Length: 427
Image (cartoon, rainbow, N blue to C red; front, side, top):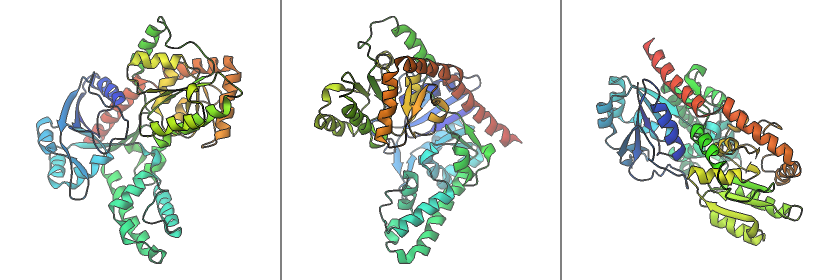
């Protein structure tokens, strides 16, 4: 089967997953990516073509009259490749459906559409309406700051924020919002399948009327085969840092919703009780300078190392293996897998939904109350004070990856989703 990926770019970890999918018998992957970094790609996201074994197609990404992103010359590519499936992100779904020429090609070639999305920030249908009503009640228009990005973007796209500014027009505003939300619902039902990595997708997309049989859960994973091989290699090499039971590591982009500021504050609050406490921050992003200044203000700069983005697998692994605890204070997910592969216990809160399948309370990690600084520090102290427990949890982390969620189980689920969508179209 020929599958065309139509996403925002080529992240380093998904490059590896796609290569594994392309290795499966009977599967051929084509991957469209923009000539320049897509404006839909988040800050600090690392992209690379290195190691890709699938067909790469570089196209110009542009905006149509409605502000929707689309790939120029995509129609030509579709006619040449004639894929059976397009796996598309929501960013480019609108242009596929709304462009009459492209839509005609999809019908003529009988191409199936699978929407790949991360729905953990998408409100359920009724929740979105309720949240909008609260916005009106509080007279918060036109900012919509408290709404998740997918909903606030929808509002901006429909220009509700410009048309309605007073509570007097509540009914008209709510009607307009429902119309816009219904268009999104129609799109979700128009595609032939949904690929997501959290079980919450069943409830979220189900609230928009998407039948359960159209939703496929793949979970998420880095290339565990490669990382396990790297792990065995670096075990025989010199450590990058001397061992320490008080070393915390953060692995992720430095953006506000990762809440790295909570980790910096935790170091400041714990250092008197644990003078050897140390925080390694692996990652880059727009919050970096702010975090450095915060560390200086709190006088803990000497206890915090900003290592930047590390994409060399061996060096990456060495820093993880030299640490004692992995903490994800805010949103995210894939970094949990990384830490678990290299044998760390995990402390986290509400992430992106993947944590529910990876981190098992008191087995390979601990959960703290979302946004609760004191509770986060208490969980860190438990593992600092019980090094044997931390070691056991780290060993259990490896077992979860080996036996439950890894690159091979994820690839198997992707291929299963492709086959299922094609089989249904033949019935």
